[in-house]
Image 1 (cartoon, rainbow, N blue to C red):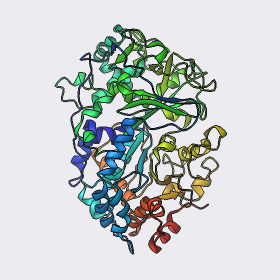
Image 2: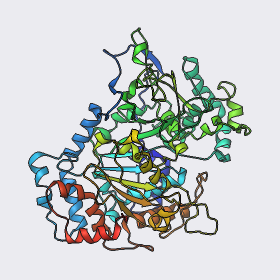
Image 3: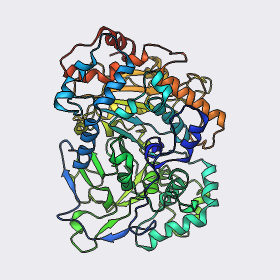
Image 4: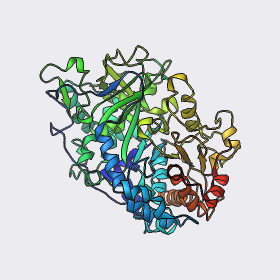
Length: 570
């Protein structure tokens, strides 16, 4: 998904969110911090540098649970410590019956705000789906934003500020998107000049570099007067320099991507590792290897090759490049038995990019690590693409890492799974497939340590037959404390049509307003076929349920009624 819902809206500042803001007078969507231009070379090309001692590796383990890197742990710790008054404000707005806010927060007041100990630990999982996902996810997050007066009036404002995590991929488009072919062709000379600098510096390039440059033009505002160079010097690690990040007022962000096992080889749900990009680290969480390196050293080789002077790399983590990797659907061109005619932009870029370079290329910092079952153990180059190739478009797996100790995952599903042309209520709306596949992955013996609550089968239609694709649903209401409760918010027709095609990238003002109204209706349940004035209280019940149990308190009668209404069967 367009991860700019959080990253660009709250950190980088995007043009589309300025448009969204202008369409609703009371919307809180507005321009945020300017992106920080911080590349060591002053342009798109990375540089070589000496490696830190003893090496760049952080906590590598071949088996067992991954541990949080210190920077992530400290971010969540500091953010949670500051959130006690935010929880008080939110719970007062939610206005629960027979609920003592002071008693609920007593442990936090006495011991301090500690995620998954004295306060709930919440994360947003944002699905893919192109501009549709941006508008759906953005409108729902806006409805959870305490800076939106309408959200506060609807009693759901403040949830965004309480979340410690937000995970997603970037803008997913289909290979049929002629609009972007035209755009890249139009700006080819500029794309060529910028990406060429990286190639001339001796680093691998691919179509993803060009794609990332186009994304930068649209979604990174670094204050550059030359639009063609927008984002050229902005690094993913530069997020750390923004005031929002320094003040711990936004969730810890995680962009995700998957690696192909080799040229012309298929991805697999269980075998292909998911890699994550945070402002602090680049890492992999997999049953056969858990390891990270600092994000500023992305592009550096494995530690076994970093003893020589100048062996490490900095400036490789260009923000547009990371966006391009996590939204890379061009990997379809590298799939087995693919003989389609090359898109126009590929034919143009053949001048300096090999015709079969369809993946985002990252030198493998984990080469030689992990056991023999780890797919990328012997690879010197990681071939990165969108997680949608294994249908993991909602990053549930990333947030369900045991070390993150999530109590609640709010899954916003903007997928277009429905394909029945005779059913306008489900056509191009989600049907729960991504959620179901995340659950089935944990049934594999290799993934037994990962906990995701039981999800009904979306492949055989059970999920849809139960109506979970057309209303909010809670999964895992009675699971053990180590299993996060999932609040599932699918995109559906509440007050406006929002099942636009993934490849549709240009929306009329009326369409954007429809997305905002529909997303607000889904988040607040104040309109539409599932309208319920008790929803704000029920949502609060789900968010606090794990903490209520940790406090040794029973569910209130109101919360019991809410769970009876919204919890999935079984």
